[in-house]
Length: 194
Image (cartoon, rainbow, N blue to C red; front, side, top):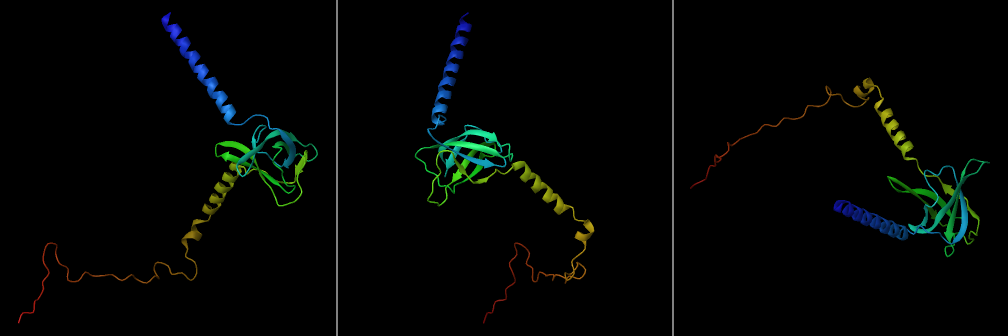
């Protein structure tokens, strides 16, 4: 009976620590609602971006992704983001989706332009770039390596015109060791004595 009480108390402590850790990570991650204005951007592919992901400028979070929907007229993904009120974006701002690390995690990066006009609520970003697909890039790299290895062996074995073959190459000079002195022996030195 005493063992069951100890196990129950330890289980409650573990759950309490987990709840405290979850609350701390939620508050430090700044995942709460962003009060601000909405803007949209259209992408040919979102590559794993999801609602709640960060919107950043120069690595600083300025908003969150609020909604992702498919536009039926051109089959592009429309991303709606909520931006903080104190951040004003120029109308020539560009947006691209980037990875936080190789293991995943996406965020939306904004790069403001140099225009004097600003986006208002429900504004639209014209310049976008879809994320690079790592699997496609690796596939292209592997297939390009295979093409380089696919050359016939006969062509690789024959020398090119104008380059000497091994039979035509000039012989390398061979050096002889002159006046070798065995190890430990002193060399013969003729001294001039009067």
